Length: 167
Image (cartoon, rainbow, N blue to C red; front, side, top):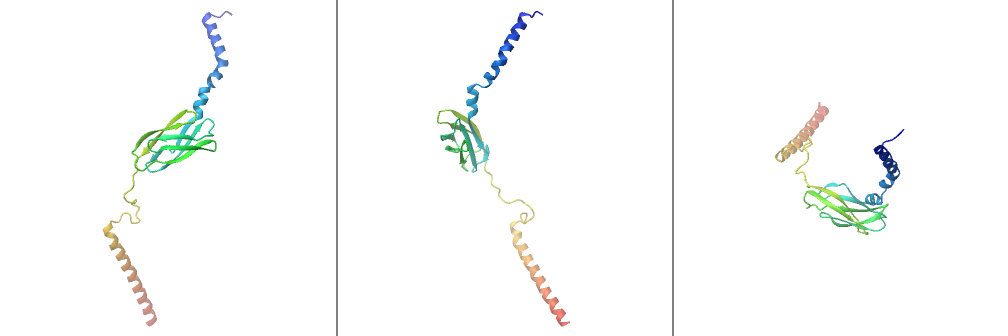
């Protein structure tokens, strides 16, 4: 069986590509890119909250620096095979997205994004029926009427006991 020239060329290229494919997938650049990273936990925080930083710089034996506008410059220290630290986002931080950059001792870098939400404080508790729905002006009336009901019950109880003893 005879093969045409284009078909023979295709078989030759495919035959050469198969043994080279693993070498292309395992390039040093792919390993290096995976070895340097910075993670934020959580990556979305309200202003004023804390976040955990976890990073990697190949060997993770030396401290590195993580910088971002809201948290400033934080040194991540080796711990459990990674570089870790905690940071606080100041309560005065504007809501928005901020880049976070890891700088390794060998000069390599990695970036991530910190999403800061506006800090919102509730003005009052939820209206759950446990007094949260009562207006401020009605509270003294409710307390006074409750005390009067308890006193009236006590008086009626004493009168009932006295009536049984005398009658």
